Image 1 (tube, rainbow, N blue to C red):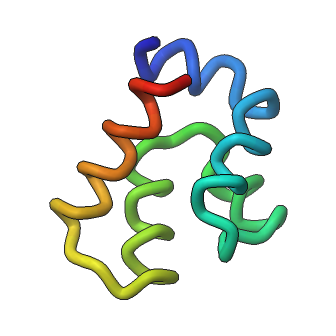
Image 2 (cartoon, rainbow, N blue to C red; image 1 turned 120 degrees about the horizontal axis):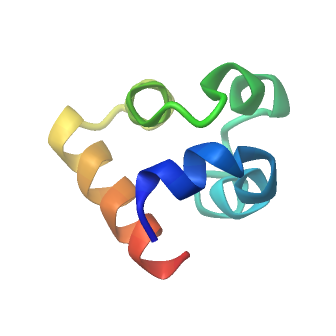
Length: 65
């Protein structure tokens, strides 16, 4: 799966993303709107992790979807 596919079908992937990162709200998912950088930024903000860790988590999540 590549990010273009996720971005193009974001509404379908929001449930899977919220299952992985449960602290993200529906409003935040709407704001992210399939933008990978916004997703990584929200993960950093909510979980207090470094940018590289957020990127790693998104890469891992992508490989499973």
